[in-house]
Image (cartoon, rainbow, N blue to C red; front, side):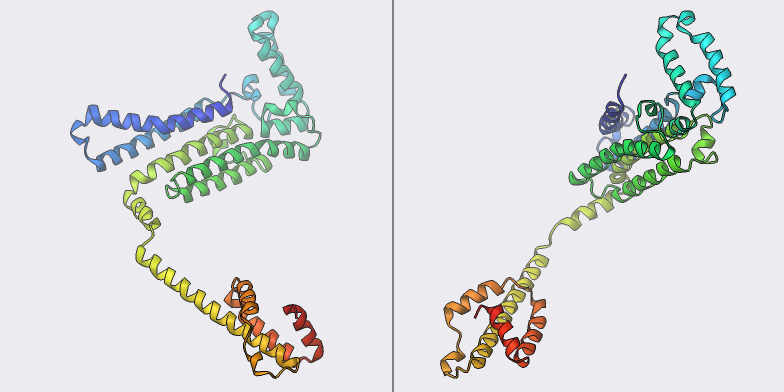
Length: 347
C-alpha cells in the first residue's frame, strides 16, 4: 500500500509530466497543422490542465477509504445501542471463524474501533482525526485530543510551505503565487473549522453525508495539492503577456541603474563633507573650551582627522541633526557637559 507521502510525490510527478505529454499527443495526432502555433498550444495545454484537474477531483472524491460508521453501515450520529447492534451483525458475517483468516485484520480493526467509539472522548477524536487516535497516549480529554491532532497536522503544512517556497525560488514567483497563498490560507481556516466546530450543514457534509470531519480534511488536502499545481501550470498559458511583462520588469534598466548610482555617489560625497565639517567644529569647540587660542588649533591634525573621519563615515546622514543638537547642548551646558563631551571624543 502506497503511503500518504508517496501518493503526494506521485501526484506531483504526474502533474509535472502528464499534461505536457497529453498536449503534445493531441496536437501531433489530432491537429498536426497546428504544431508550430504557440497560441493553439497554450489553449490546448490550458484545456488539458483543466480536464486533468477535474479528473483528480473526481478520483479524490471516490477513492476515500470508508470510515468505521460506513463499515458498520450506521449513520455518523448513531447512538451506542445502534453501534452495538451493528457490530453484532458485522461480527456474525466477518468473524475469522466464519469468514476465514483473510477477514481477521479487518475484524480486529473494527472491533478495536467499536470499543473506542463507545467512549465519547475517543469518538470525538476519531471523528476529527481518524483511526490514528487509537494509538495516542494523551487523549484523555477533548482538549488533549485536539492538541495532539493539530500537532499531527503540522507536518502537512510544513511540507506544503516548503514546496511552495521551492517553486517560488525556482522561477514560479509570478505563476499565480498570490492565489496559491490565498488557497493555502483558506485550507488552514477550513481545516480548523472542521476540527474545532464541525457543521453538519457544510458543503462537504451535504455532498458526502456519510463522511466524518477527518475524511473531509483529507479530501481538501488533496484538492489543495491539485488546484495549487494546476494554478501554477495554467497561469502562464492563460496569461502569457502578463507573465512576459512580469519577467521583463525584473530586468534592470541600465539608465535607471546609472541614475541610481549617481545619486548614491552624490549622497556619499554629502555625507563625507558633512562629517568633516562636524568633526572640525567639534574639535575647534574642544580647543576653545580648553583655553588654547593658538591659531594653529584652527586646523585639525591630519592623522587625528583621518582616524575620526574613517569611523564617522559609516554613520547615516540622518544622525547629523541629532548630533548638532547634542553639540549645542554641550556648548551651553557648562563644565559637566564639557566633561561628557571629552569622554565621548576620548580627550
